[in-house]
Length: 303
Image (cartoon, rainbow, N blue to C red; front, side, top):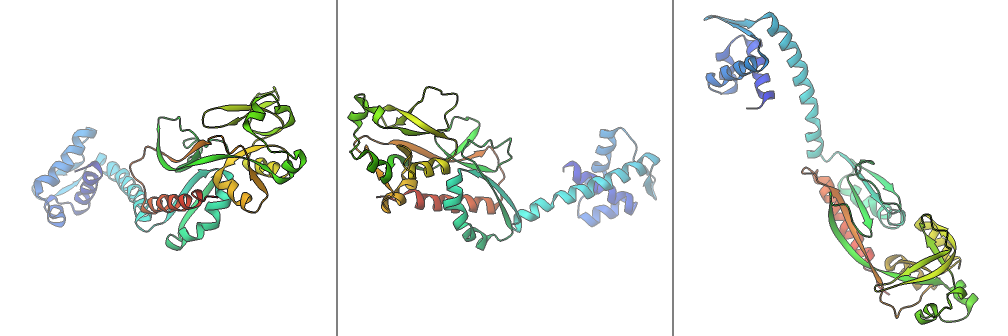
């Protein structure tokens, strides 16, 4: 038996003033009751009970010990509320994911999850930088791009193409088709791209990334979040690259045009990331399965 069980037995013996009564009450051998008390006395090097053939009562140290133990048992029972919450599907989920994935996919469909788990709070940490699970105390994150943290558990969701696009406004301004060879042969100065999250780069150049190569282009604008990046592209401020699932709706309504299609696309991995953790409430397991299904359906759209 564990220590909490032994402490509870000690309290019962102190209250009933009888080993035999407690043995009958718990349906345990009397030797088990005796062992529980003696093991505590040995561990804490204190005599807790005076025993006679007719009566059992607390020693002076035993009275103080009993008072401390009662508080400890009450506190341990308070902790059991977490088990109860998990059984009753009450709790919270804290998830990190990119801003547009939160605003375009998760939030518009979140009511579907609440229909099954109305008492679970969802805390969304939407950020285009890589979220730190430990520092931000997140249960999981959705990561677009490579996973380099070996201490995290990765669960693949999808792999998507990185489309190279330009707005109709941008293409109308230049009034010519854009080919990869044109950019490689020194005509890049005729075009510019929108840079995304450049750190300490004052060269004025950034890269279009493809499956087998990178092409340098000058940039006039650099931004640090996906919403600004998309809006700048729609305004015709440069060539840019976004995941296929984000580009396709704008291609369908003719606000964007896919360019450089002859060049194989760079592939973006999308994963759930978790900390190594054994116990996960049923509502959290369901949330991950539900969100995975939702994202797969949204990310798999095609032209």
